[in-house]
Image 1 (cartoon, rainbow, N blue to C red):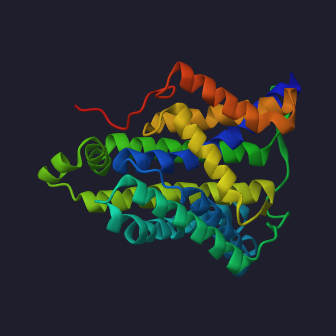
Image 2: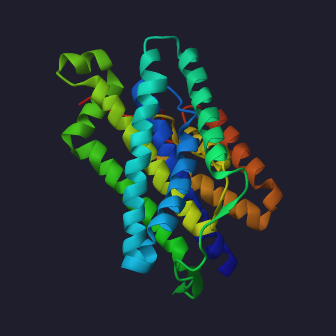
Image 3: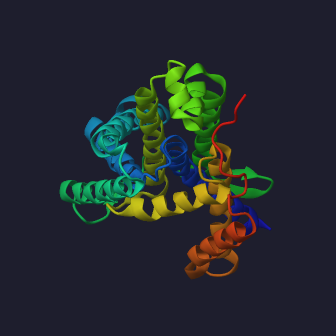
Length: 301
């Protein structure tokens, strides 16, 4: 039973990361019907920017661990959001009226560019986060010792996902995003600046992905230039699992995928965890092609 709870908490923590990245995929698809294949690399950029800021500013020595982590998260989210906005302006906006395949090719090109840019700047080898930044302690929950960092990572993911859901559902800007997702032409007639909404989506999604990259760096302690490919693929799988274009579905799909991976690695074989995850995806899509919660972003009211 102890192993089960350990793997469950580990799966929820990793699933929270998948969910944060999946939200970027699903928001862009909801608004533009486009899969942003460069999104996983923005996650990698978040991890590398976090390490750069951490080592260059010496935050942990100046303001303490908790304040440093919070400040790092904010700075990384802002910087990656700016990169996401630039990506939209350079790679996607000029092709908005073109065939969808053209935008897909542009997305793949942007992904290759980001991967090689990271490798050229930081090198192809692994980079390591300092090991003594956060206390490696465990919290006893129902008689099971759970690493504190795992709990913090899961709670941070939940807070960010809840904040996004509230923003989309309860604010005027969120209403504008949902309106653009339903019908861009009608949204323009209602006075909504569609270009600004699309840019905002390309800021929010990368910001969440960048925060996920920072958390992965802090949790696992090492990063590499092509880590975004696998995490991006898993997050894309999570988005499809929950229902592409569906924000709650991306959250559910990410958490579910993380738990499936953790349980598969523990009880079957770590070598089969990826095959198990994609196998479950295939079975669910056979039974429900639109995903668990359906392909939806907004509802007409």
